[in-house]
Image (cartoon, rainbow, N blue to C red; front, side, top):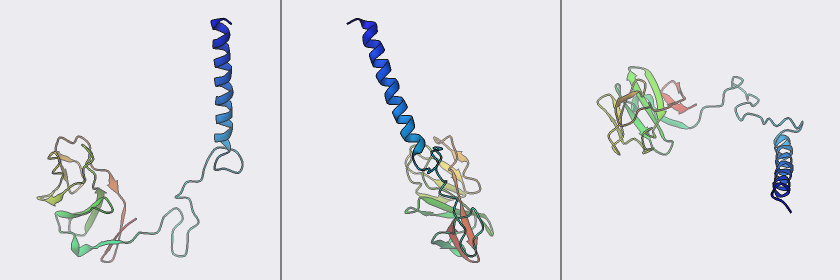
Length: 151
């Protein structure tokens, strides 16, 4: 047996395996074999819901729980809710973009990660002080009356 015969055998076997893998993947999750799956956000709305919107989750806090110019961290939900101006509520990931520590507190207009000293502005979660170089990702909340919920 020569080296080229061995190479040809390996290439043929690899091509057959790849074809089998692609055939299996193209049928997964779709009855018509197109390879696309339904997005989890595409669902039929229930009573009182707009199409394409998921119902709001459990209540995180009351609007009165979030100080103006400050915020509150919800460790279990990994989210921080801020109120930069009276009546304006925002939410961001509570996971620091530097080394993925959970932020520790909100004070003096910043969301603070005590792991390495990163600080993020309460208004838009942009970096106020490094070593983080990226802002905290925004999270969606719904404010209805005096209730703040994850959206």
